[in-house]
Image 1 (cartoon, helix red, strand yellow):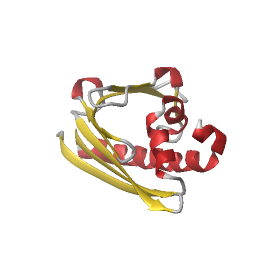
Image 2 (spheres, helix red, strand yellow; image 1 turned 45 degrees about the vertical axis):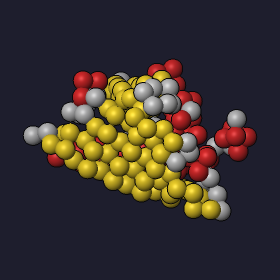
Image 3 (tube, helix red, strand yellow; image 1 turned 180 degrees about the vertical axis):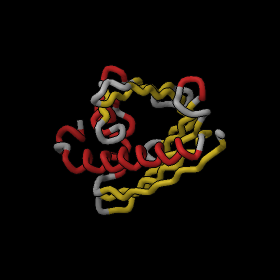
Image 4 (cartoon, helix red, strand yellow; image 1 turned 90 degrees about the horizontal axis):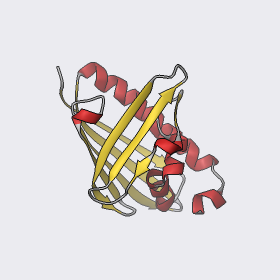
Length: 154
C-alpha cells in the first residue's frame, strides 16, 4: 500500500557550497552524476528552469535500455542554500513526493548536504529508492572530486 515514507540522507563533500549547488542546478553537470550506479542520463533529456514554479525533468537509462523519467516543479529556490521540488504522481514512479535539499557551508571548502524526500509509495519501493538515492549522492561526491576546477567554475 502506498503511504507517505520519509527518506533522509546527509553527505559531507570536500567541495565549496557553490560547487555543490552548481552540480544540482546546471543541466550538463547534473547529467554526469545523476542516478543509481549502472544508469546514465543523456544531457539532452535534462530540463531545468531553476526558479520557483520552474520545471525539472530528465530521463535515466540503464544498460538494458530500461528508462525512468522524473518530472518535478521547483517549489523553493534559495541560492546556494536550499532546493525544494514537488514531484506529482502522474509523471513519476511514485504517488507524489516532495524533496528538500539543503546545502550548509562548513568552511574550508567543505559542504554538508541534507537530502529529505517525503514519498507516497510502498515500503518495498521506498527501500529500492533509498538505495538508488544513496548511489546517486555517492556519485555526486565522486563528480565533485574528479571534475577539473576549470570546468566547475565555468
